[in-house]
Image (cartoon, rainbow, N blue to C red; front, side, top):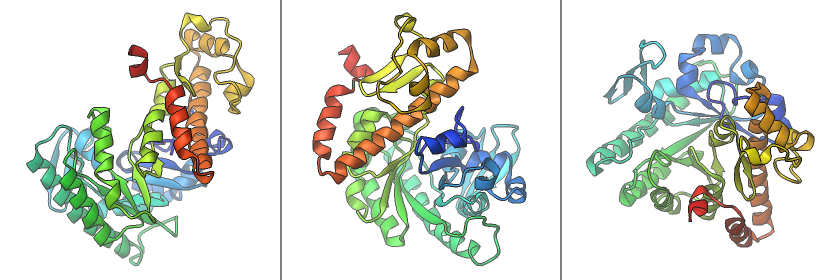
Length: 352
């Protein structure tokens, strides 16, 4: 899922997302709650209408941002009082408020409000976050049931609700959280609290401690992940869907994704390189422009550089997922995984 935090996937128009084969994008409840705000969202018909995107949208609960971005926050049993990172204004966000906000936004997949502890954290603190997450999961489900019957504005008729597994790097807490969420019953399950600063082996271990306890006939979603090689490895561990800001964030730093690894197109080696970013790629950038031209745009400070490279990177990630699906359908994912690992060089590989 390309990430459209503030009702926009940075530097990529909805038309271009559609042409790249994007199936679903992600929006951010916390940011949209603060700006443009729910009154505007209701008046303008919800997020699909507002940003002219008419395929599915998933919104996160806002919990992660409340705990990580808010200038100050005060946790209560019913949610969190926090001060906006924009202007310091005081707001309250809890399960009921999060669900009704996502209902107003009109996302197709809503996330239960959760408590994502920082990394590293003591076991007692993580235990408290897990229990709070489970308590808020029950309240989130109840809030959606109420919102469906009390006239809460909802431009999207059918909305699914996913629960979020927390537990940091404590396997027994992740197992407990996953099993309890399954008892509550959700339309899908997310693996939260990963890629929050921990080393990659710990991230993989956290996923491995979670997926065996989630039903295989429900979607399993790794939140905020990841690098291409991580996605391949996480699919091998049972994950189905992902979101990540890296395709567009890397593009803003002139970094292009290829099947062999990343390229930094500011490099002098690309000054006269007439090849596309990736041979055979069908994205607009690769079909029409050279590495030399895109390098020139970055060196000249032209905005088109960000647009072309962001589009390419999003397209590459979608191509990666398409290739993974093809390999699964052909019962050759293991072979695909080995070939990808041999071919794709990470920065760690380069140092070695």
